[in-house]
Length: 135
Image (cartoon, rainbow, N blue to C red; front, side, top):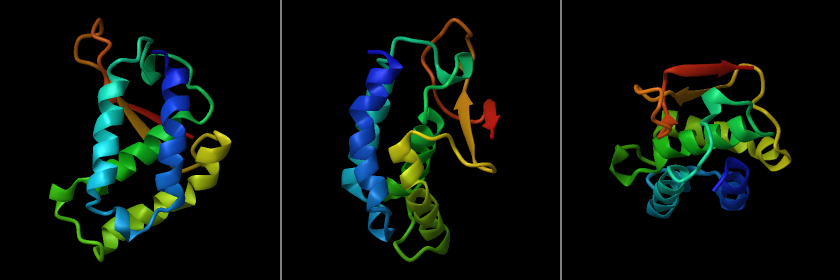
């Protein structure tokens, strides 16, 4: 699968979560299962990762929303639905719903980190802190 197909396949469901961003997503097992499925499918993308190619329209926003939701969705994270920080993450995600829908890049001041593999010949990649794109 290529990245464009991957984004088209998962953007609609991600958009539904982002559109209904609320404290109900904190510790949400359904959202967590979706994120696990997306991460597994991401490993099947057969083209260079974002740090090694030009980003597709809105790709950074897509991954930023996934990353933020992953922080709060894990039921084992310990965040409660009244945790001020987790609620702030939810608000940040909700703010980007129109950008995700329009396939726009992250707004100024937002950053998405992409982790490069330790072995440069290994194309298995994930979210992380090694490569930073600032807009």
